[in-house]
Image 1 (cartoon, rainbow, N blue to C red):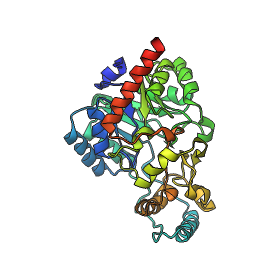
Image 2 (cartoon, rainbow, N blue to C red; image 1 turned 90 degrees about the vertical axis):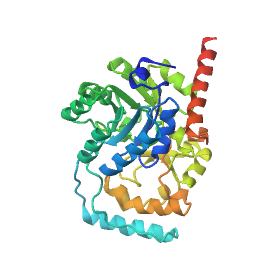
Image 3 (spheres, one colour; image 1 turned 60 degrees about the horizontal axis):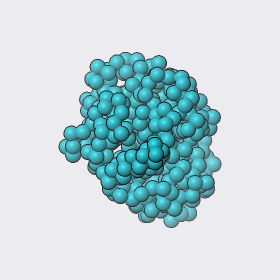
Length: 355
């Protein structure tokens, strides 16, 4: 499975574990990297010091290459406080009806400052930096390359892939419509950029000259091979790793994944204010109207304590159960074993195709 791109990153297999913010603790990242793939620390919700602390834990668990993933956002956000108050009232009422004692509160800041997160990433100096929600500034690109950090940008359309290639990214992760979690769209409305991965791959391969990474709905080695045939230099899997014991996803969430029906994976804004793909559960169906109008990260900050309480109560139906279209194919096994299984499946599929 060794490819030029994998060799460039110093990994054995062209396989990347997606940087799923909130669900990729150091134990998972290190286990994937130690198995020869690229583990990724999803740091979008972390303050700068937490990024440094968790990066140190990853390094302590192994010396293999790993990635840190961030959301490209402004440092400061303004919120319509009247709309916030209305949303809080409706969210609190929903939680009361569902029997959860927790209520919303106003955070000191809506989200970590990206400039501080970026500085921490540079100090941590991972092998790879993965970005979503926008393109980083030219000076930031130069700083990462000066530190020999490979830059991967997330794109949901050909135009976004071109934007990252023109900015100097070393590779582009193509997020197909099948992908779970937050949509990385930044040049288009998320609903206008729901392009199937296997259509997006050859279109982008024709448009840019950087390695492409396939992300969205890939759950086994057959999918990895199919993505390679269509032009991918590597595959990025997220949902496939959610059921691993090292993953910090809530146990109720993990229990729901194998039972997920593909037609109930949908685009949701009511948890965070930004389009994301996950299970249509009780919260989604009872989503307060006022909450749907708040932007990211304001709504994300307001619902955070509610999601934590739901996880503690084992209420998966009130969680943001992010997942890709083929979540029902998830396998619950240690991350290192899952990497080996994916590689074995890929090799089997390749032999079957050749013979």
